[in-house]
Image (cartoon, rainbow, N blue to C red):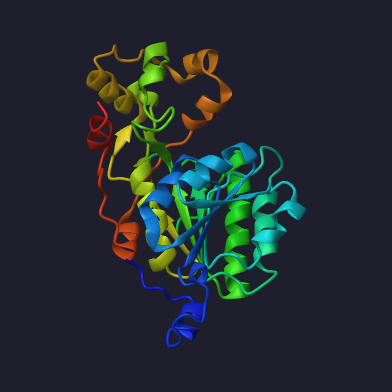
Length: 314
């Protein structure tokens, strides 16, 4: 259980009953409470008071049923999120950037609100491994220069820069998690099964790229660990130990599910058959190193490779 280091808790530690019970626990705000956000909430459990920003009033009953206090607001409408100021002692920011421009205006709006009152103690931001761009199969460590090759990755770099500057200016301990492909058998679209059923092709071995993975449960645990153990301004690769090329990953999954292996095509052939978004993932090859995550956050992966993770739901 993490130490409760809120200044309010320390102030009233010798005055039992002086502070309302709802303020005696750490208050963790989840910004972006989808599948991973809910897993973070489950990992935290009753040791903290959970709050979550949601754009949908329809989700209020669901969140309350999970002992999460829902806050309806929209990062695209800054006036609707002003109430977030001063509510939380720690924040997990998993909301994606908007779908256009090179800036992450959503992160900009959130940080503006968090600056209004006494800042939070820690903020964890979920970024993407796409900020590294194409490493041509090389090892990507956190000190490697970013080289975003897509607009969505450029927006993530903008968000990372804003998060880092916020931490330096406010003294808040900020951590950035660079996340690759998220999978889990109990996650919607969280396995290759549907794609294998469609017979979507993959690249032939000579054109294939290295891809990286993290089980959704291990990602949630990394978010929680960073809340209490992340170092100020630190970047962490959050990936498992798998070192597979994309085609080999789909071959493994096909064998596991008892399905035909996907057809292999050349890169030129892929351009004729695959959508632009999928092609963009096939244009970047890297092998992420997770040493810092294990050493500094103390993460011991429950699913060290996709073999364990996919087999758990087979």
